Length: 146
Image 1: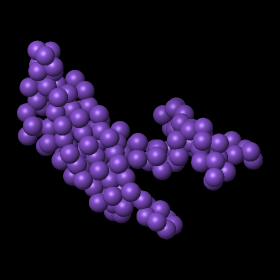
Image 2: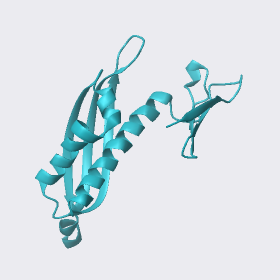
Image 3: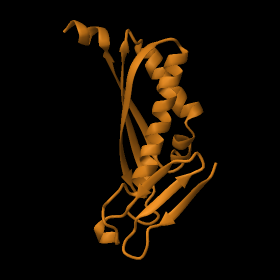
């Protein structure tokens, strides 16, 4: 895996990441840190990447289990250390998984497997942060009937 980060120049703190898979992401800093607030902060990107990593796992695990999953979102709320390096110290993952007749045990097991076995991002972050999880299941059959 490879990524190149290029600074946008002397009038700010805009950085462009070019990934080995041929994609681009932009990051910026807050105005009080010399940035122009034009893009997510690098630490927000780290948090977003972790959310994407675990949501990907959960969907894949449920699909492989032949469950009728139709949606998955995860809201991450994090606290950081007060002093440098301001690592994440606590991250809560609130999953909302949508589908038809999804067994709670299967969804909770998918979340557990992601964090205990598959998600390399959360495996790294758990070295400094306490990770907690919650699961909400929305049954599309109940939604359609309402």
